[in-house]
Length: 82
Image 1 (spheres, rainbow, N blue to C red):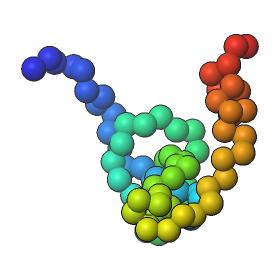
Image 2 (spheres, rainbow, N blue to C red; image 1 turned 45 degrees about the vertical axis):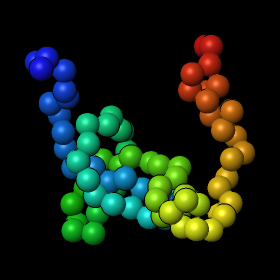
Image 3 (tube, rainbow, N blue to C red; image 1 turned 135 degrees about the vertical axis):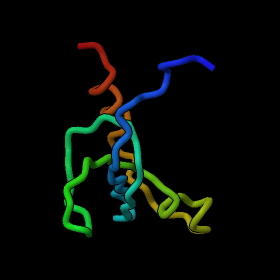
C-alpha cells in the first residue's frame, strides 16, 4: 500500500442536513470554516448537507420537495470563471 496518501487530520465534526434539520456527529477530514455547539456542550466544525438519509426519497419512501432553485447559480459562483 502507498504511504502518506490518507489525510492525517481526522477530527470529530457535525454533519447537518438543512432540508430535514437532522444532524449527526462523526469523524471526518472535510474542511469547514463554520462551527456549531453540539448537544454535549462542545463546539465542533459544521459540514452542511443538502440531502441525507433523513430527506432522500429512497430512504424515506416519500417524495419530499427539496429546494433545487439556485443550484446552478451556486455552482457557477463556486466553480465559475472569476
